[in-house]
Length: 599
Image (cartoon, rainbow, N blue to C red; front, side, top):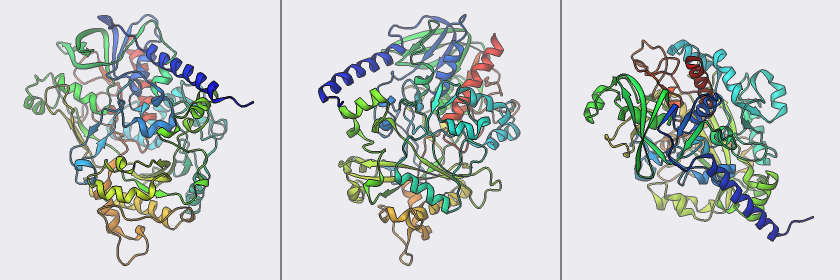
């Protein structure tokens, strides 16, 4: 029997009120107490995991401080992924001007970072991708991160994973778990155009694979961080929502501005909530999990960092360590390829604000289905010519379906040449297209995070030095060439409209296709390179005797006491993957080490 629109409106209204209450109830409205056993700074992927696991100890008191606010429908509905990064859930950072990406607005590349419960796990594209086992062995063997090889960290990946696809688990039972708090799910009904994309990759020699299984090279319609009910599996939804414990206080809109010390021991934090400054003390440990940008900023503001840089900002030096050094990120460009026939797009429809209709909301709340419930990519892993280990791929192409609203100029505002991009995007209005993202997964280039000033409210200086290593540039050209070939000459091409040169770039006069024109590919890199916002490696762990590390392998800051870091900043090197999975793993392992050391 059909449900009337009026009944749907009533049901949706009640569900929205319940959802809002659930999110707000996760955090306590009153200021926290003055003293705790543990204080965790940042409720992102690492921080929410650590805080939740520590609060399993009923005899300890844990405070979790988050600068942003609680979740809402935008952070829960997977299809809102492209909308949420434009709003209040983003720190809205930018990188300093690079030698590439000069076509972006003001010639600076945006850098999205999550601001709120769940951190970047509440705004990312939800791709479940652990990274190659060889990368973690490299952490241990090359960087001296003892205890972080694949055989060591595998159990912590399994500890958080709750894989809802029984076939994937059955095919690779040693590589997946169904017992963790974080659900990952497969695409229920992939659009026909996604299936054609997979087939085209198969024909070019890339088999269908489980990218989180033993063989990474190949193509997959990726699993995503979503539940079987079509809700985003952020760290907040997975570890904090509905699991409120009396010994875990969660304080939102609480921005930590300084760590406090007695000698070399961390004793507390200074934070601001509702324009009032508070101090909270920790009797056991402070865990900094503010992310790969904000963690080094906070440490440097507190006197932990390169001495010369701290002196420049008149900050007393507590410990001279290479904080902020070694920033890595995955460089990419985006190709927009129009789908010829909208009938090939069935599930991934209306992935924008137009999908927030009463019928769609009713389907999502009642059945966990409909346009709001899905957001998936295809991922193809491949190797560059330079890559010596062909089982550890260094390149990938991620592809997702998007819908271009009629407001073309709003999209064009992201670029410096607003008029040129407005004209370029006109054929995309009210159309579905593939966003094809060629990515360098193992870049050699690295940069830094520094302070702009000693004012904690000044955004830090972010310089990833993208593609500063010449081999990175050459290999990005390779993967872009592959993506262009897919769009222009593979069996997929017949279902796509021909590509046109982007504003500021010209096709070669004597070639028929863009993939044949290296000067065009290099121009694209110059104009529209940006990142997958996978910032990491700014507070690196590893050999405690190395001058390049800040942390020992137990994630303790060298030379200091009662202070650890547990987020993506601790990575010795960037995984060849979306980094959310690895950050969950760091959170799980970090929490266990804290328990081992203190209980």
